[in-house]
Image 1 (spheres, rainbow, N blue to C red):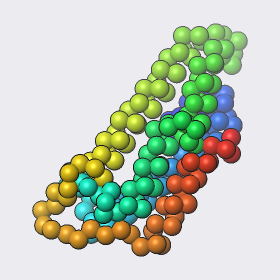
Image 2 (image 1 turned 30 degrees about the vertical axis):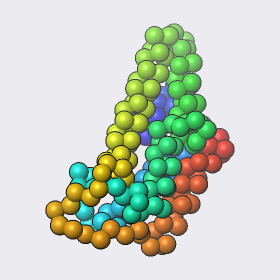
Image 3 (image 1 turned 135 degrees about the vertical axis):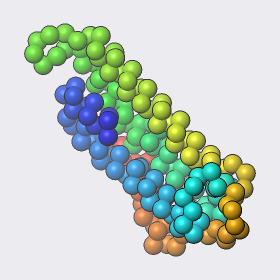
Image 4 (image 1 turned 90 degrees about the horizontal axis):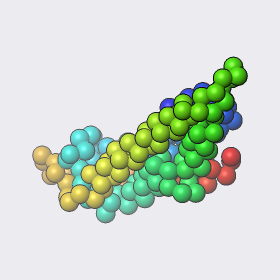
Length: 170
C-alpha cells in the first residue's frame, strides 16, 4: 500500500485507486493461499518446516505462484501495470504543487519505489521457494498434507485470474 501513498503523494490519484484494486486481487490470493497451506498442513505455520508442497498442493501452488508473479511486477500482470504506472508518475513528478521544482525528489521517489518493489520480490520468492520447492516436509511429526477443498480453492482460482487480467481495468 506504500505504492498507493506514493501515487497519491505525486498527484496520481487515479493510479492510487487503480493500484489498491489490483493489490486487492493478488494480496487476497496470497492471504487465502497462506490459509490454504496452513489448512493443508493441519495448522502448521512455520515456513521452515514446509517444503515440497507444490506436488502435494498443486492448486494452491499454482494460484500462489500467479499471485506472487503479480505482486512482484511480472510484465503484463496487474501488479506490473499498476506499479509501473506509479513509478512513472513518481519519476515524472518534478514539478511541485506550489510552483517549486523537485527534480531530485522525483528521482529519489522513483528509487525508493523501485527499491521497495525489489524487496517485495525478494521476500515473496523466498516464501515460494521455502514452502513449495525446497526439499520435503521438515515437520517434527509426520503429517498427511492435503489440498484444500473446492470451497477454498475456487476463490484462489478466481483471485489468481483477476491478478492476471486485473490490469486491464486501468
